Image (cartoon, rainbow, N blue to C red; front, side, top):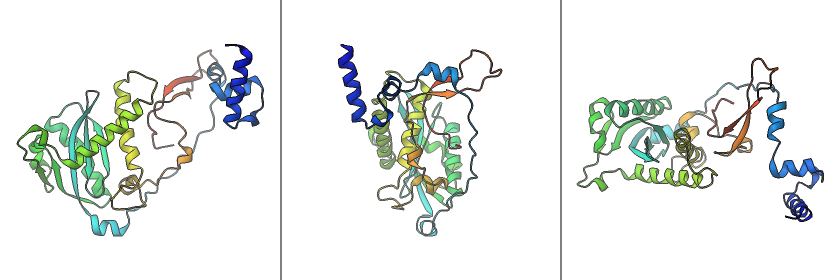
Length: 270
């Protein structure tokens, strides 16, 4: 393309993006269009000041919620994404979702995944009175007492599912599929698939559920005590390519100061 035409196009884009305040120097518009120079980041980045991690003060569950919704029915199932199995639960009325990757579907695995979910609800003042699942979970009936296990009594495999959890699985798969088609990658590694499914569940938990137990408090706040995040600080999208600082010892070598990485999920401690 003619350099003059290319220059005009780039300048028009800059004006459209309202970044004309940066000036018309080559370094300014190149940084806006292409981002910072990766080689410069790898060679010049220095360690910044450490951020203070604030003390966690959990938000208490409002009394009216525990008064009217203390007994919870938990629905659960196993589903697959790209051939990888996940254990999934969603509670009636509360509608909080949990998801965890699993290696298999045997009894020990099911119990190992159910126990921390039940403990989380108890820690927030809820009581899991009923568990709803398909026939696959019949083997754990005596291990989940005093919670009552109700399994589907369907005549066909197609009907052997709990409706609430099936709708939730469909919703999370839609979110995951949408995110995948927004990524430049054609293939995703296992660790990225697992993070993607977790990201889909967490995104749904960050808002009050429609027809849920609260119109103003997010599911994540109700079940974890964490206040809603400052969405103005969430600057990185899932799957974005970034450069992260790597503190090398010794630091007077030519080793890169940055490492290329893919954004997955926030750690929650920063």
